[in-house]
View 1: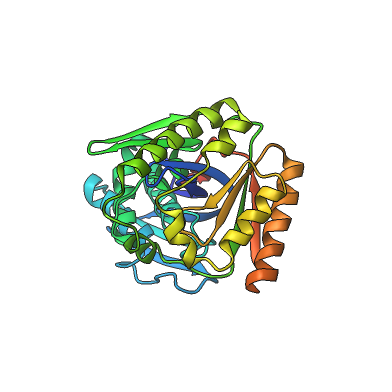
View 2 (view 1 turned 90 degrees about the vertical axis):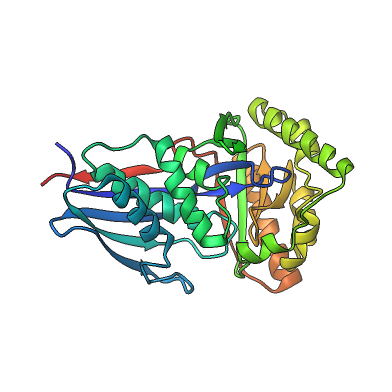
Length: 315
């Protein structure tokens, strides 16, 4: 029996991972967004938002969750409608894949209520349209890991080719989100259309080395490869105290540190949970001392599941 109502959860993500602009991402356990949806006799989509966060679009035409849900309903034409509530916990413009998490949670919820649901992989094109609505670019480096879990390499966008890659279970992710905002649209506009060949070669080498290092848990290789010579030098100016926070993370034992997505969140990698807690504390302390900004710290091993259905209920 198909469920009549569902609750879904889609986790935050760290994208780029330093050198992998628009091509690398990994899912973490929290924060994340939740959607509760149920079938209704009236066709179409009923939508509302429950949130304490400013800046979340309440209009169904502007919110990525309702947009993606409507795309899926229009494609599948079910004999019923859906009433959906987005419980928006993640802040907008955080660098944690906020728009992707909303889109993913919505798509998974609607899909679970369909008579013939799609596979997770087949949901991704719908979710990417939510990313296009949010920032003008249908990038998959947040959406894919939030949906599928684990580490994801976006090998190609035309055609879309997502390749999962392993992350050694010994590694721990730290994300420090300062109480400030960087809009993805703005962070993308400051990037160059072209880069020198020398920079491209260095970046390619770092991407390949980082994937190998994360899979093997090779600490020395990870240290050498969490290096971004393309986006970080330009986006750092959007994050008060960035270089001081990065220096504090590395001094506390981080294997690498860079901007999470378009920022302002900063991520670091640790070799143990104990070290991760020390690194996170030092990063938040530095934000407070240098930039007078308070932060939220998230510490997590890699989320290998991605989006999930928290519960299903029948008629």
